[in-house]
Picture 1 (cartoon, helix red, strand yellow):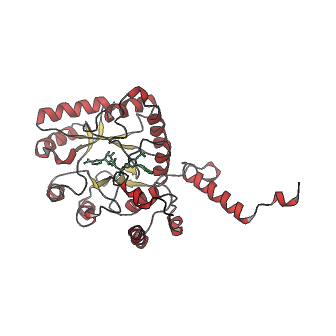
Picture 2: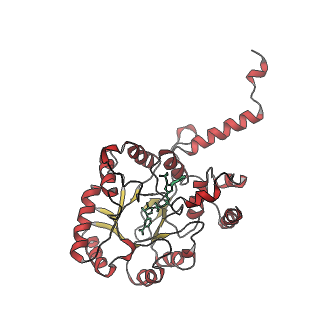
Picture 3: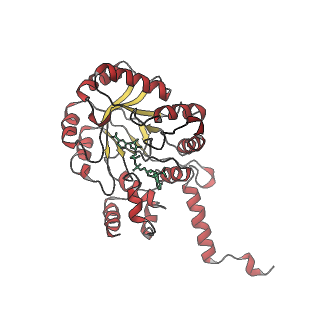
Length: 310
Ligand SMILES: NC(=O)c1ccc[n+]([C@@H]2O[C@H](COP(=O)([O-])OP(=O)(O)OC[C@H]3O[C@@H](n4cnc5c(N)ncnc54)[C@H](OP(=O)(O)O)[C@@H]3O)[C@@H](O)[C@H]2O)c1
């Protein structure tokens, strides 16, 4: 064998190093097998630390047949193996709560989950029955977070949420919206009510919440859950076939998914982002956004300008 074969060219070495670095980014372990800690942020009302990447379940976990959920079990395992805890569901998402509950049990992750769901009905008794059913479906005795979905009949449900929080059945309570809807109604509730969490849409295209709701959440000490971080996958259409800018490595970003998630996470008023996926490789990709460096304010502007130029 010639001596040449024993020497890597600089290019081969760089490619090998990049592949190795990318592989590391997809695992919770760094060099020398040291666990790499996911980025966590405090819930202002308690100080409890929450990993910044959570998981949504709309459509992705509304599996038609629970027994066919083999792939979803792998997706869920990857979520926990990469340090995730918060799973967001709703009785509006078909079988999602039950599928999550079954898979938490099957994969042995019940004790690790931060379970979040919603009440989505009219009337006090109907709300009570629905919330009991959600806890049973998700397999939890205490729901970590109960939210009023899209403010539906919130004047009726919020007093019950407060009572059940006092009684220890819910650890945290909140309200949700999406797509820039109900913002005017949201704001006075955030000012008047003792909410632990608010949930709304924020992504590189839908940025209305930068104006009022994100600053208000920071002022009032309310944790924020960010839904539709990929605009339901529409953001990927604009960047299809486009290369990431080389400077995205400065904040440890190796995919467009991570670009979109790190843009959101770099906002100081964001507590946790909840992308949804039914695919293992997408889950690994999304979880990697919760590790490493985040862009600073100047870099966020650059990211936005670059995305808008495509
Ligand atoms: N009012 C409310 O309370 C409200 C409203 C909307 C949403 N939510 C919550 O927020 C969660 C997230 O929002 P969303 O599900 O509407 O939209 P989203 O997370 O913005 O987008 C989900 C879509 O992105 C794709 N995707 C995920 N990761 C990807 C990756 N790394 N690369 C490429 N594609 C990827 C998924 O497809 P694959 O399965 O193929 O990966 C899926 O089609 C919901 O699931 C729900 O829990 C709450």
